Length: 112
Image (cartoon, rainbow, N blue to C red; front, side, top):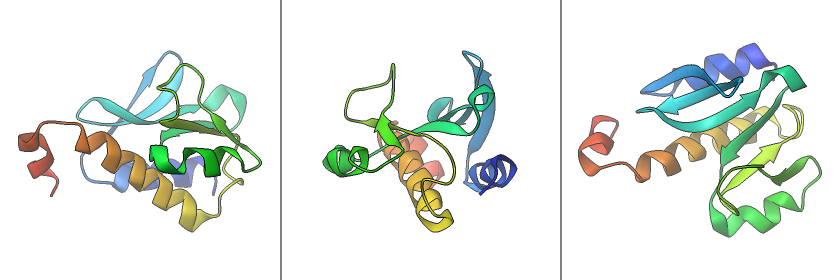
């Protein structure tokens, strides 16, 4: 998947907005980041993950603990080719769901 297709997919998820923070492209729900991409460094990006899957994910080539983000909750994916399109979309959707789950119930209800 290329960066433009990735962007289109993220923006297709309900409630998603995009913006720039710390010179990184961010995809957010209710101003809470669920994808942060370093577009100056190729297609490296970070997403939130289920802590139970953290060890298995970071054991894979091209996936590591995300720098400067919550330990064992965010992974950094070296480029778009590390995951196939289906898994990439599923991981992004899961990241969005994990971030949304931390928001107040009233906000969660808007996207149910």
